Image 1 (cartoon, one colour):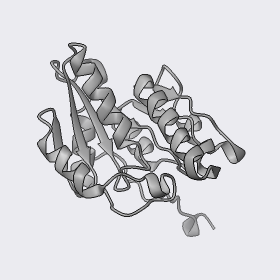
Image 2 (cartoon, helix red, strand yellow):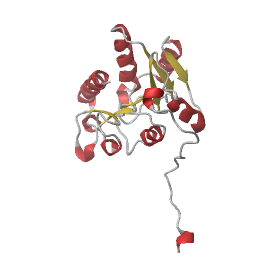
Image 3 (cartoon, rainbow, N blue to C red):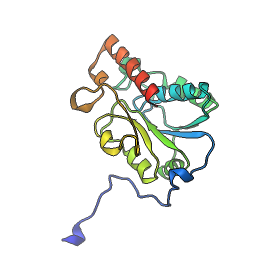
Image 4 (tube, rainbow, N blue to C red):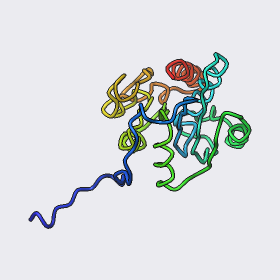
Length: 197
């Protein structure tokens, strides 16, 4: 029986090399990493605003973005989904952003080893596999309190949780809003995420 049993890790490979402890990572600018093809659902807008605010306040912060920045109206923002084309251009032009439309998983894991914090303030998520990958690379995460994410982050120890307004099933309340109320929910959530980061 034992020969027929195998462990499935949900498609996440263990680290191929030992990640340096956070206190041994290179010093200098604070290096934030954002990973997620569906950038708007995963919170790219408040992430960029938070980094811009930190930089205006005198902090040396750099942001690496790995995202296709998918177009079209996503299910979290619907008609209030920003323009993917404009955001891809913005990410390419911002002097403090290193932008990649996509990278193989091995390269993403390498980026995790050279950054200080993963930012993953998603509006909706079932689990958040990128947080698990970051944890394997000893990279703390800042993420929202959506669904199962609080089970992955020990708040203020292995990362930080940003508290959004939750509705049924521990999902962001704005998912169920329509029209003007959805726009207002997005604005509130963006502000909460920006401040939380």
